[in-house]
Image (tube, rainbow, N blue to C red; front, side, top):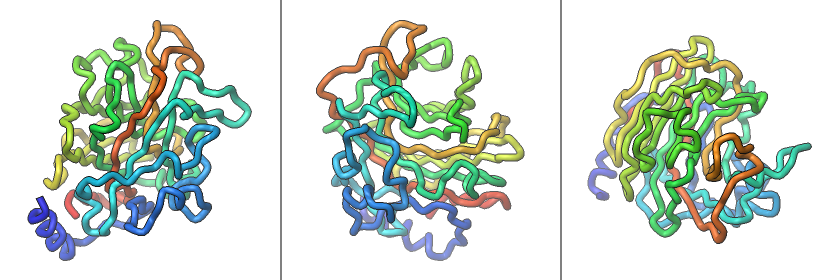
Length: 291
């Protein structure tokens, strides 16, 4: 595995790079406790359980780096959830229906440069066999929430849809899926692919904040990204924030308030591994498909 990694690195140094708006790849010296510091590139306060710290949530698993970690000598990180992953928004009630641990870029205030013009969001994801998911639940490993918190422009999902009528094209819960604006009914599922275990799944999502266009690129392991969706229409209005981590919905009957009702198993110990997280400027058509 390490031979192709070295080859990819040598190719990358000769390629022009797109302007980076947020650098979320993790240097080797970073510790879980560093995510609790004001100096963290991710928001040190949000979003996690009320009685938790990032030092308790973040892990650094012993897996090979992802495609876009390699040129930065960065390391993968794991975001975990457990029974304490209960978040209370300011002025609201504790979201006992959800289990949440999500990283949000510290510079992503809802109207910043990551939601202006055309920008591309990169992430790689893989499972952790020691912290398996329960695919009878719906999970949101990545999404972009509008600045007023009313909906999401896009949602990246896995697991069984809580409401199958919202996502009628999903027949296999063990898939990775990209859906469009969450307030649409039914949601538009732009892409789905099997969540093959123990390999890196690499994504780049380009959003035109003025053009309302969406383009998705995908590859596995150390192959270059390939366009798999678009450009196509999506309602990208609303600015907002990029979430990377775990939001686990409950199970239960349709019609319940999923934020505050529903069933979650006890003794949770679940996680997803991420790498290569960064946001780049793509207003001039620049998208990094290979490091």
